[in-house]
Length: 374
Ligand code: ATP
Image 1: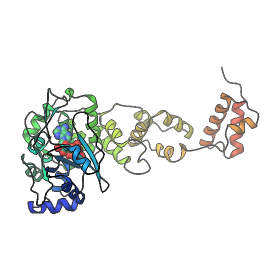
Image 2 (image 1 turned 90 degrees about the vertical axis):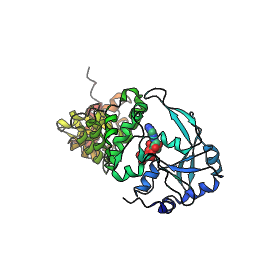
Image 3 (image 1 turned 180 degrees about the vertical axis):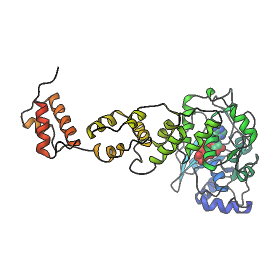
Image 4 (image 1 turned 60 degrees about the vertical axis):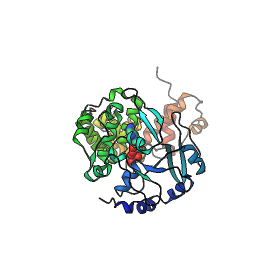
């Protein structure tokens, strides 16, 4: 793997994160560490990640010395700083204990990095690099070996009891890196009880999984581990809709993470109905599509509703050349008749039955002047 020998760590760190030398200078002798995903990704040679720092001291004070805005977290002091345009999260070293399975942890400030690493999810995320000259990797749990072996391993047997969302995180890392569960971790993970976690926390982690490039693989793993039930063909649909929403014209038409999540796990919406039979006319296509939300539309397209491409690129933005003023000028009284007339003209235009301004006006007036049924 690209992880260099220890002597290269300092060079790799300064090359990937040159802005961190400023942190060392203002730390005032308090040890500061790069931790978590950034260390893992540096060892993997994957380039820059989000920067998480831990200080054995006051995070807010360090952020203040960096000239950063300090955000007081309600449970513990963490701070955000911007260095050369990069966001840096700074936290004071802390230990965590879980009052009961799945609850949020009780947090205690701690003097040491060791306790801070011991509260983490997997060995590959429980390493630190001190921000000092000639740093050595701090790796109390064998994370580097697990990285090299492509293995996800928890730090202790109660890890998934404490926080079952770690099982969802395992699927995210397994999908991203192609890693395997270390056997004991696999056994523990299959016993994880996601029912002890709040729906919000579960959903937040599931959405992070859904945002992965290969989310479908992660959902398939979760199903294989017995932690979720996929909807029929859920993994395939998640893969297809993820791809659909990654490039034009569908990119940004629906939130990719939420749509991939719904593709994998549900709930079912109107997508199957939209995909079942193509509408006979463009006006009906527009009517059907307008009743659906963006997630349902993207899912229907992924299920094969090709007509939705024309809806997106052409029909959805079809506008009349006339407006209500034209109908009023032709003697129609302001009121619901205007809307009925304009709607009819738009349908006719979509269906190729009213081409040009005069034809639109003729249809609109015919309908607007007709006495309302009922
Ligand atoms: P990504 O590369 O997806 O951003 P990350 O490893 O940076 O992943 P984050 O969710 O940003 O992950 O968390 C940062 C670090 O905090 C993790 O690397 C891990 O050490 C720790 N961590 C986050 N969530 C948990 C958790 N539920 N239990 C234990 N440790 C956690």
